[in-house]
Image (cartoon, rainbow, N blue to C red; front, side, top):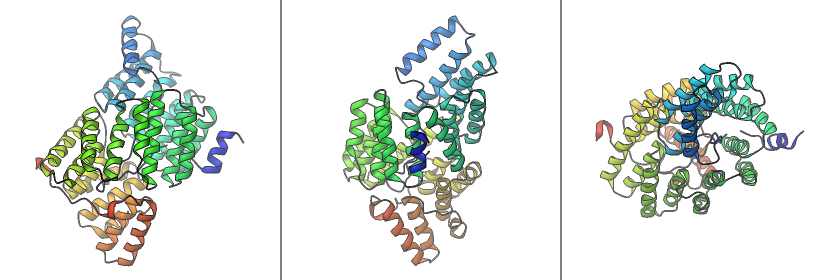
Length: 417
């Protein structure tokens, strides 16, 4: 058995779910970056655009441009790049339909970024058929299976990627899988392997951010990990947001608020906007919190216009800060699309907030600290107090950082309030 196969056999592997909680919200970073561009991304995009004006029939460069747009959307949190990516990738496929695994990989990455996970799976399967030796195709297929709740197939696809190309992209995906299974020590080992394979500052920044998220999960908020990420790449968006979360978890609220303001100015990602609003509310700055939640609604609308389906984030927000009935509608749709534990927890909590506890308990989980905490709240509402205490103990065991296991008070912001 090869060394990379041993990694999974001895530790079990696959992609990236971290739960960082401030005020009852769960932070779930997306899958590892496509990593097709470890250099100046904006410069590469500009060069491709210039080249295609001269040689518009080059299918490979159209595909590379599409992948660049997908990565630029991730880095900048600007969903306007997604339609551009789709246009470039479809032009590549029009020019060369057969054997164009680069464009097929691009479509898998694009649909995954848009949370169209069934479509991402289908595009990735086509990419692996077009070129079984393309490691990124197998990695994206693994990502899609994770999001669709099929961890057995996800692990198989990741193993193929690891065997074909052990490196940052495959090791960070392995860390993701370990974290899903609460195997934090193994996740840390996978991230150490990723550090050893890092090829540039973007890799280092990404890996240090993931180390920070893992430290939080194990009850040790780490500013140092995010500072290392920012040393590697100043202004790295995920590091700015992670540093703000760590400051909040350490009780340094005013510093955290300033850090969040910097993070959302650089990268107005919806989940970070929610967290910033929750922190402002916790600091008594309620008018500013409401403003931030209105910004969140605007950001979510922009993402929808870019083709991103995000009923999970919308449902979580509505459950705690808007209309729980609307949250249930969002999450019922999400549950049909991807019946994962993460979605089940959010759906259960929305049903609870809507007063539908007997339905909620059917979806309640205890695989993460936040899920166990939510389950305890539902069990308490059903007068199952002994069960609730067990769930609370489970939550504390999984993550001692949960601040008194209290939940943020609901803030009315529906209809612009």
